[in-house]
Image 1 (cartoon, helix red, strand yellow):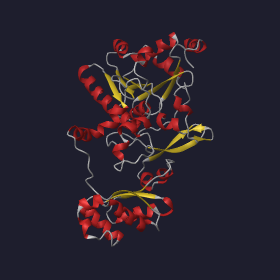
Image 2 (cartoon, one colour; image 1 turned 120 degrees about the vertical axis):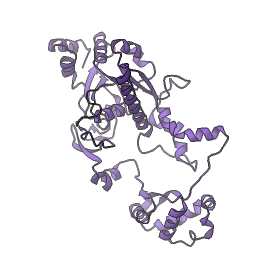
Image 3 (cartoon, rainbow, N blue to C red; image 1 turned 90 degrees about the vertical axis):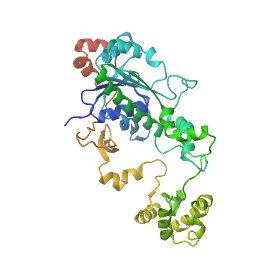
Image 4 (cartoon, rainbow, N blue to C red; image 1 turned 180 degrees about the horizontal axis):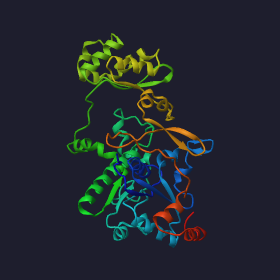
Length: 391
């Protein structure tokens, strides 16, 4: 069995999450990923928390199973190395500000002349064109623009979600685009440039809302009850009982005279008086923990789950389904031993399981890549290091 992207070489110039996550997905599907980092410090996410015994657990989560090269992008010889790498690669993934790769001397036009089959995925906050193109953008900013209002029908402002959703969506879209570009290259022999923005990754899900707004239609609730309720000891659970059949199952479980009111046979009444329903559900849940309530509702056929609070991931690390189904895998983190991480998020029947190698130190593969891929001698490598072209 072979991996889908076996034989594909990717240069990952990514920082933080969106581009590194796209490259990580390709690595999980068999691509050789060379993470190309600045010699002075590397990817900034190497210095982000959470920390454990002085070691970041953030960086390894998005950069395991990659090789690392540390190059001085401003050095003349460093720039030559970049161009040599372009000639030996299939895909470049980057998430610098628009125009940065041009300044680095690896614009698409330059790369295409060296390697006509090269595919470049450029991820940015707002795209390569438009009035916002030069704005800095991080996950929380993009969520605020494109996602949070959609997720909050009650209009209340809350903190952003428990993970970098906009970053991850963008990475997934990016890999989809790369796969399409590789398929097209097989037919034409030519690569292409892909402009992928985080804002589009976040707002694509709202296409129906945009169309409705064009017709001056206000978005209306179409189902109730559903939402998040408090249980014992300030734990929370979410549930959905948004159609007649599931609401009847909820009624039989809660056994409340309020819910048995005939008016709630009508969806419109359930939408208008949803707060009344939710209050009754919270009364029912007051003497039970969120996991207990969720288990009870699920057994009755009402979809429910305990809510993971404080973004600490502890509930996920202990989740019985994720553990027993094999979706949490051990990955080595230098200095900490083996820690659980989430596995590659889908399985392919004709391909082997991904390799989960560790994230390596900055510049760990410099010598190997320069000698064995680019044909430099060990003496030349030492000269490059002495002159500051590489780490």
